[in-house]
Image 1: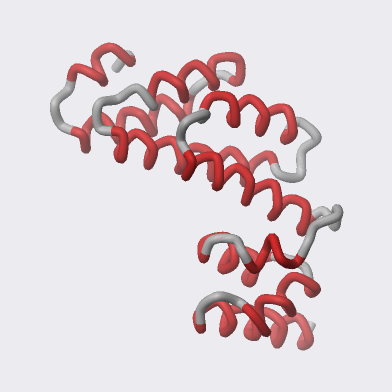
Image 2: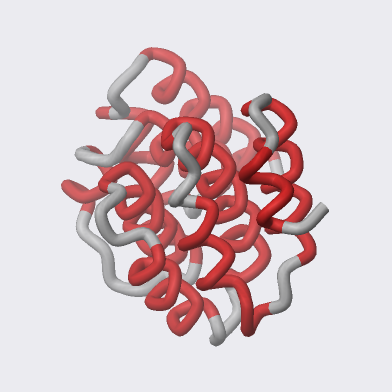
Amino acid sequence: MNLHDIVQNPDEHVRFAAYLDQLQQVADADEVDLVSRVLTDPDLTMARSAVVRHLDRRAAELHFDPAYNEWAQAMTQATIGHPFLAQRLREWALFRAIKLKLPWHPDDLLESSNWLQLKTAAEANTEAIEILAEAGRTKRIRTTARTSLTQRSKN
């Protein structure tokens, strides 16, 4: 299904699935254009949802890769005007900094979304997990962080 056919379909569930399929298969050179075009869908909530799934998948693939910074800059340009998507990209940059032991500030982590705090509590380095075990936003985040610390101490 091409992009023109996708947009013409009145069912947002069909469009959502088709966008995800297109985003999964897009060539790197065409990614910015496709993301920008998806974000022109009349159902902006659905379009943003498809794009955030794409951003999460790609960032997870690339966050250890030197190509990440160029990709993130391109995606930032493609998602201008969409604060939630911009926030997700910033949070991926923070997660990457934590994982790669690059400079980061604890306040940035404590001010981040529940999504990032939970992800960090489950997957990051001990310093970040200790911060979240003590001061994570929700009980679930603090518990996940404490569990991660316990599991690390057993290894």
